[in-house]
Amino acid sequence: MNNLLPTLLDWLQQVGYPVLWGTVFVAAAGLPLPTVLLLLAAGAFASLGEFNLALLLLMALSASVGGDNLGYWIGRLWGTKALNWLERPHRHLRQRPLISPRIMERSRKEFAQHGGWAVFLSRFLISALGGVINLLAGADLYSYRRFLILDVLGETLGVGIPLILGYAFGASWEAVGDVLGAFSSLILALLLFFALSIYLIRVIHHMRASQKATQEKKSALVEPIVTSQIAPDRKRSGNLPP
Image (cartoon, rainbow, N blue to C red; front, side, top):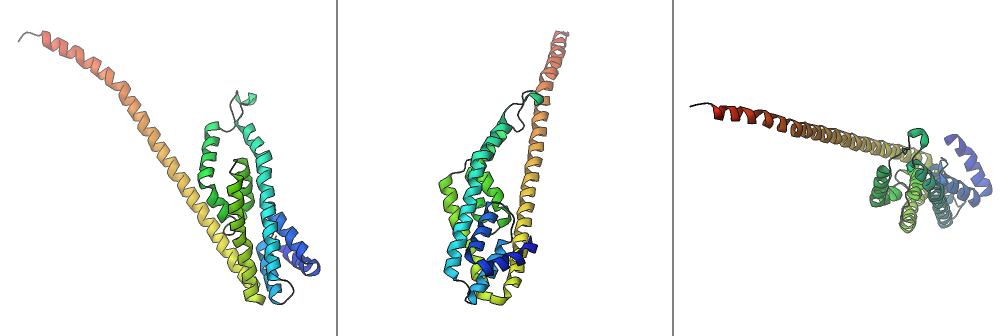
């Protein structure tokens, strides 16, 4: 996608603010575009007097929030229907659902409890997941009011940080972009590592719990048999003469 950057920069210098707004909006809706680099460059251009930094911030913020809301409502209107379809029994599966309703309910509860952090952090820290989080928030019926508040707060940082850094570093904005890209990739890798670790821990815990339950069940079945065998022996020993 970085191959598009020279074209976007050329359009930005020729057309101006509408290119920035449209690019940020489409990227926030889910299309992977190098918006961070574009914002860094726009901030650098503002330091040269080509753009107004405050207007850039306002345009980028409105575009990002608009794109995020589009993704949220797509998830709410169509994602919810898709999840409901997955929960329904299907003939080719012998009237079984593709995904257990219990799993879906647990997913909704977990997103309701922890989804706020996912929405907020994906606006600026792990922006690569922003489009997916928007769809999930809508599909899981996450509170729109909370989503909107967290989205505006997160996107203020998401567009403000690269614009201000670009404005501050000027001609060195590309080097700053490389640092931000490496940092974002590192954060994403760490999150994936922790998520996988937690998943493995839960699987191991579930396996141990299942083994323990199986052993207890076997013990419960064996104990009456042993007792029934011991009882006749005691009865016979009691009938023996001293």
